[in-house]
Image (cartoon, rainbow, N blue to C red):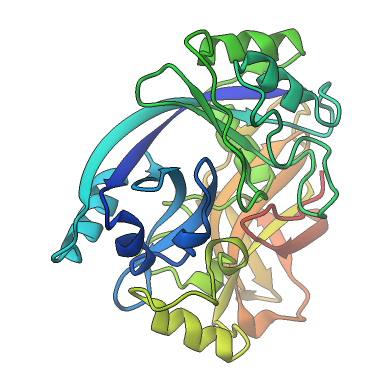
Length: 350
C-alpha cells in the first residue's frame, strides 16, 4: 500500500519581520489576528493585494514579542517580502528573507502510528517538557478537525539547533516543540523510521497532497484567487480584527453569504484498467469535469492511487445541484465522491 506512512524533505522560505513595531505592522497587512498568536504558536494567514486577491498563503509563527516568521512555500519568499516592503512606511521593523529545511510527515489510514504516537516520538527528541504535546495529534479528533489525513510540518530553526513543530493543518495555534543541540531533523527521521514510516520522494508527497485535498500555491492558489473560492476563510481569516490591506473584498463577499462564481472541490472515483501498484500524478489535460455536454469546472491537480482518481477542481456555481461526471481520457469515473475543499482537509474518501 502506498501510504503505509511517510515523510518527505521540504524547504520553506521565511520572511522574518522583527522590531518594536513588528506585530502592529503585520496586523495591518495580513488576514489573521497577529496579536492573538502567542509566542511559540503559529497560524495560517493570507497576504492579499490591495484589491483583495491572493498574494500568498503563509503560516505566521511568533518567535518572540518582536519577531515573527512568515513561512511561505519555496519560491514565494521574495514575493512576500516585496509585498510587505511596499507598505512599510515609518515603521520600526526590519524585513529579512531566510530559508529553512524540514520534514513533512504524511500520515494515512493505514499508519502504524496510533493516536498521539507521533506526539510522543517528537516529545522524546525534545530536551524540554514545557510543551510536550503537538496540537492536533494523529487520530486526535476531539475538536472534529484532526485525523489521520492531516499533514504535520516540522522544520529546523534558523540555527539548525532546534526542531519547530508547526502542527497539523487543522491546528489553529499549534504549539512549538523546541529542543537542545541533539534535536535534529535526522533524529526525527530515524525515530519515524523506527515506527514504520518511510522516506518518500517529492512526487509521492505531491500525490499524497492531492489525495487529501490540500490546496497548493500554484496549481490551486494564485494572484487571481478570491479567498472564498478556495475555502481559505475558515482557518486563515479573522473577521474580528481591525482593518488590513485587501480586507474590503473578503468582507463584502462574506457579508453576502460567500457567494462566488466558482468553488474549489476535492473529487475522487474508481477508474477501470489501472494497475493497483501504479500511483502517479496525472496531467490535468487528461481529466475533465462535465455536466451533460458542458464543461463544469477547471481541473487543477490530479493523481491516481490504487485504482482511484483523485482530483482538485474549481467547479462553477451554476452547476450546483447538477449531476457531474469526471472523465479520464474520455472514460467516466465510477462512484464519484466530492466535497468542498477547506484548509483543514477536504473529505475525499479513500
